[in-house]
Image (tube, rainbow, N blue to C red; front, side, top):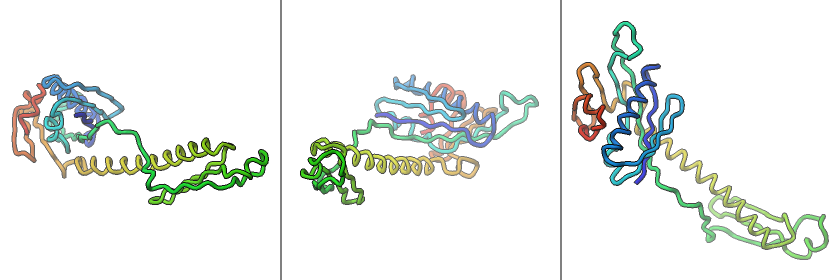
Length: 225
């Protein structure tokens, strides 16, 4: 199985961005502890970790949500404690199959080309191909060439592209909604976990379990499951 862990800075300014790196290091240690393969992609205050391995979702399923860190930031000059937040979302990353049109949902007809230029053959032979996708009402006409077969190939490809774009938009919205359900508002009102660094304490507000921060730094996130 393959998943993507999205780690994003939330409240807390620069310290929140630093904590994204800290959580990234924790999760990659978890991967090494369990012989998972992983790939890290960083962009500004966002990190995506693609992880693959047996029962990988089981190891990371309790990580999604808002993570609250109470600590003195490493950049703090006056030893003041700050509260910062990082959000974590878990996404399925299974390989998607190629988009295929259900031809039972498409009507096909051959009609005479409306083009006048290009010779008499266009008018004598029904070389124009028309496809209508019944569920969406999308209609495609192809009369680019004098060859009926070539026009049909072009029509099917154009219909496939249009339907695939619609499907991709649906998937994007579904993923976005799923992510938002996991992280909530990403701040104080939707905490999944609290890390109190000075007390060497971490508590998970969903499972009710707690452990030492030192153990989490070693990638032992299973202690909170």
